[in-house]
Image (tube, rainbow, N blue to C red):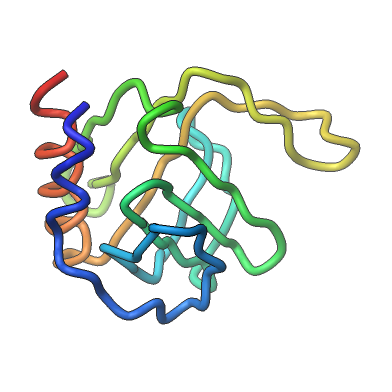
Length: 136
């Protein structure tokens, strides 16, 4: 993983006020129309937001916050386009190397995220992820 790429990106405003660690800076933010688990269980609707720093991806649905360490946790990324006309879906899947428990009594698990972006945000996120993973 080419994490130095993230260090070279320009810093953007921390518009969702994510608490940052030392030497961490925000490189991408977006409001999400929807996000969920990799297989498609919904975790958040249009009040969701995503912040990417040079070290982490933080997804917030307004109730819970999911944090993924980019260098240690992410194993793959894929942009998905499927379906036609009104059944068309476009989303981004990030798989991680661990299982995260969530839900009531932490009874559900997931090993990846599905993020839906507005068009321009999706293009920017895809560019970052493809460059980040280009040297695996």
